[in-house]
Length: 128
Image 1 (cartoon, rainbow, N blue to C red):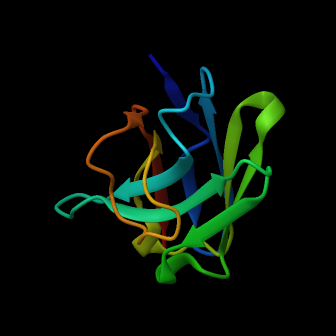
Image 2: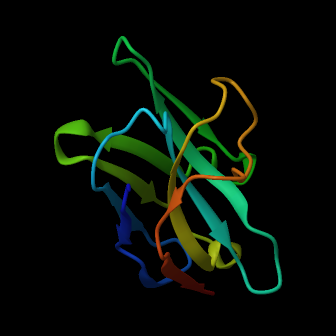
Image 3: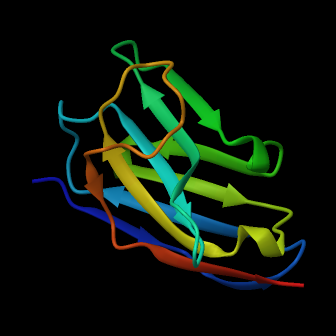
């Protein structure tokens, strides 16, 4: 069983920054992507960013259009961690952010996976 734990949420003013952290208990062949997703009240969960590592150790990243240029996803394999650096935060970024480890085809769209290992989420609140 893979456990996923997020941390780093909080409250900031518009224009501020936060760094989210995601730690997985172990690497497993059952997942190839680690991604960040978010869900605002009354809205569906949506993809934010994800990172894929292939057998060569090369990392590929994808971002939702709404966060491109503001958010950066990175990975530290030795710490089994994935980070989401969020700059230029906007009130519309307010949501609960979830980390998930899952398997999907490389190059597929950044969508919420039907299965995977999910964390409990961390709240991000951006005030205007």
